[in-house]
Length: 421
Image (tube, rainbow, N blue to C red; front, side, top):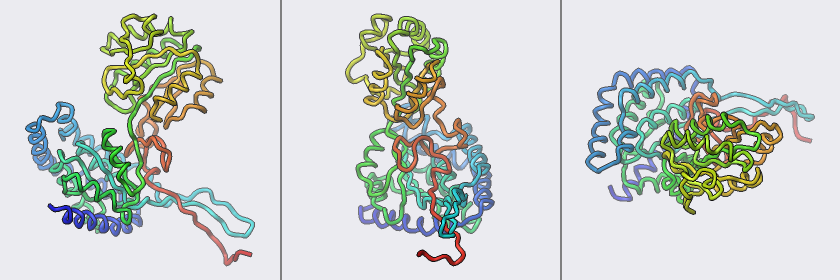
């Protein structure tokens, strides 16, 4: 397709998505839930077709030499499809935030002022080679009353179009415009640029993928972007911290799933507890295959720690590697987090209430944990039911984004003929 044809196609899709979103915003909860449950049935009924379309993507990816990890993310196995079906049921069971009223206050003028939750409008999702995101993201957006325009990675084009067709079939069966959930069928990178220019029709862009993709989207978008650059998460072991607790949290945070955004990437240890904590922690982490890279003070305590290079500080390893630094006090730990953290998740191990509250107040992250694993920073673990991503910027969401974060609030006023004096 020429650039002009791409522009016409995507602009038209965005305009139709805006029109469809208006109808979706007014749908009763029962109909939205029926759409999600019927989508789950359709996904089961079309399992073989979806897997056949997915195989086209996987075979093409294998020929292109995609890594095993990328091919794994690309594959819609029975396990992944079952998870998608379960996710649709779970989202259908969640409370609907749309129309929720709160903060009703009677004013001296006689009017009553409150706020109502309403959909954001049209969500633009840009993501890489994870076709399951097509269903997960669309389901969350639809439940929150939003239209969604999806642009997946080119590696998953057959899978994404098949899943979009499934959703659109269900929407049409419920007399909802199929354009409420669309996948852009263009793999040309120029399509992203066109999508990012549709500020007339798209209300917010949510990118999911590597830091490079997110920076590209942020730098080129005319539409507000909810960003999550990376997860450089730390655990600070306070002088009053419990050694066994710190080791347990370090092991869980680093080794359970090292390739996810809420995995630990660094340990900061108060100098007074380091001689006791670090040898025991290093022994367990190294036995689990973790390569520790540390400062001179940490290496003086555990010589097996590899000297850290300048490029290691603030790195999101996403593998079994971890920074270790001995600090003089909490002031130094907080300064380090401010310099090298990514506002994702920070943990303190402490038995001091005063220190825990200071860390809570002064550390800037979407989630701050006191004596709990960084791995808990997740929509499901926080009781949101599901999430569309974790925002590390503060407008308009900070942390895991569930259904409420896919809505906003408008003011509503009840009166009985009052006029302003």
